[in-house]
Length: 145
Image 1 (spheres, rainbow, N blue to C red):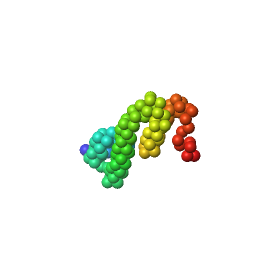
Image 2: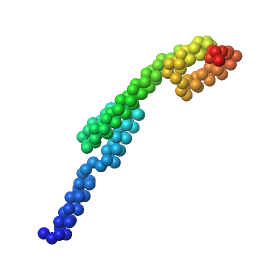
Image 3: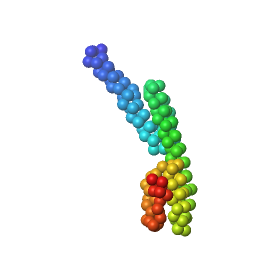
Image 4: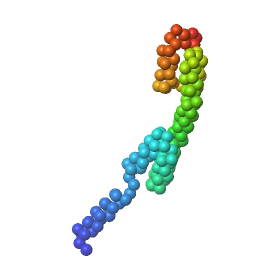
């Protein structure tokens, strides 16, 4: 065989090797995808990505990094679900107190919720609604300041 055929065969093998081997960029992209899915609270999809990563040539450190991120995101998602559930339970009570013109009771219930779970746009909007509907009443947390 001539030299050019050997070189052509080597070039072909090199091209096949480049296509077939999982590159670090591909593994890193798959890791980022798994972590992004976990932060979006899509635990099942993120776990599937981790399983797929285990079938590649990802290093144990890379797998451990993804697993750690999945665990942290799982805890955050659990807390978010608990907060959403608590808000669904607290909101009707606050609104019924507001509807019956029990502004202090509505403030107290809202304050108890925000003390436990923190404020967000919805709680601030409800607080503003309470303040607008009962401006003559001083807020209990203003008295303590």
